[in-house]
Length: 333
Image 1 (tube, rainbow, N blue to C red):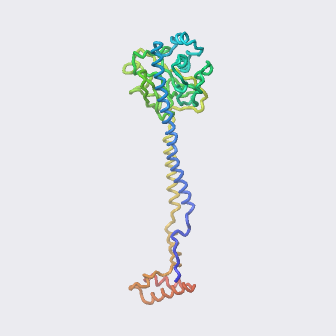
Image 2: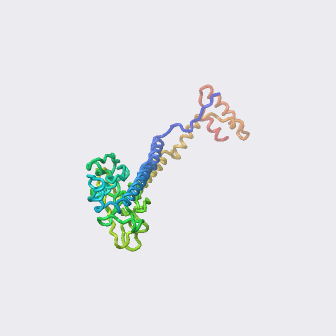
Image 3: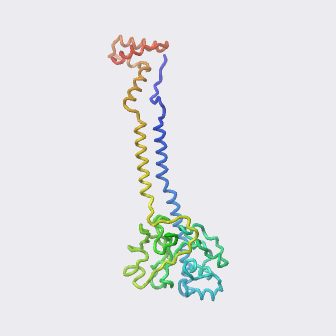
């Protein structure tokens, strides 16, 4: 006896189902998209923390040998001791950090590197000449001074000595704001007691120390009422991308994800057959489906109907078709 197999999905996968699958894959990729940049920012922040600690150790050694942190008063002492020809004072953090190299305290330029919008490449560690030592773009940290002189470590060990990453505004390195996106809304700061901490950066680009902006002065701050904290910025290299203190891609990701989800749901609804299409498909399947053996043996089925069903099965074996006659018998059974 021939048995006709019924395919519950006679049309296979529809285009709607294929498009819906593509949307699901795209949505999954969109959700995981921020993971890789986030991991990269974490590693860059960790590198900045480690380098800041190295700068702190060098600063403490320099203070022990020359009496204070690098500024314009220590340059003559370094030149008299070492005979160095390096430029060691000026308007950038590079100038003052060169005193650590000239004094043979800092053995590498790498310790001054921090990933920023203006320092994208690590130093080449060539500092034999004035043109090679800490070139623009080699330094990623800003140097905090009291106006144009260095802070005294004995006044308040909780004061900040170096910081990163500073923001880029109008093509220049800012002395007031931090790049909120570079280290995942964090700023790395080195205190004068050689402790390194990460501060939250608000939407205005201000690093928050305690409950106040880092550079805020007055009662209840680490600077007090007499200090004038001034960030001496690094000399920038090529600015490959402009940092933004208010940039936030989070809402955009959620908006795009929601839009894709809506499209996915609409496509799923279009891919689902309508009730009329399902009923028509069921009737087409019934017209070619052989009688089920439980129907023939059903005691509630009339003998004449059972006989017609048996004849129908025989007709199928012989290649015939008496579907119309047997449909009524099946309905009565």
